Length: 121
Image (cartoon, rainbow, N blue to C red; front, top):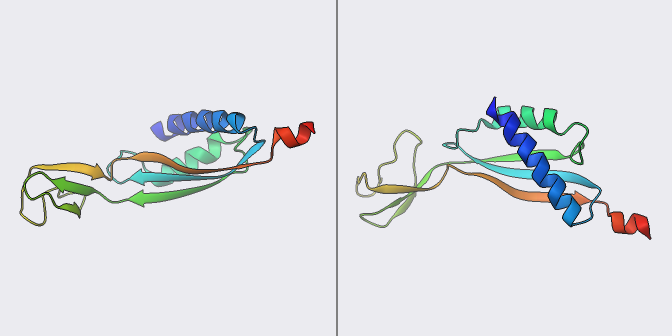
C-alpha cells in the first residue's frame, strides 16, 4: 500500500510546517485527491490513521476532497470536466487534450494549533 508511504511523507511535511509556525499540534488536514492520481482515498484515510499515531498530527482530523478529471482541449480551447474513462473533448471530439485537474494529490489546508512561543512566555 503506497498510501502509507505517502502518509509518512505527509506527516514529515506537517511536522516541518508546525515547527516553522511554532505550533504544538495539527488539528486538521485537508487533501485533494484526483481520481486519476493512483491514490485511493479510503486507503489514504486508513494509512493516515496509522501514520499519525505518536506524531504532532496524532489527533488531527483528515478531510479528503476527491476531484474529477478536467481536460483542456488543444483544438477548441475548451476546458471540460470529463469521465476518467473518456478524456476526449466533449465539445469537438478531439483527442488532443491535456489533463489539468484530476491527477493531483494536494495538501490543500492545514490547521495548526497551540504555540510553543506562548508556552515559553
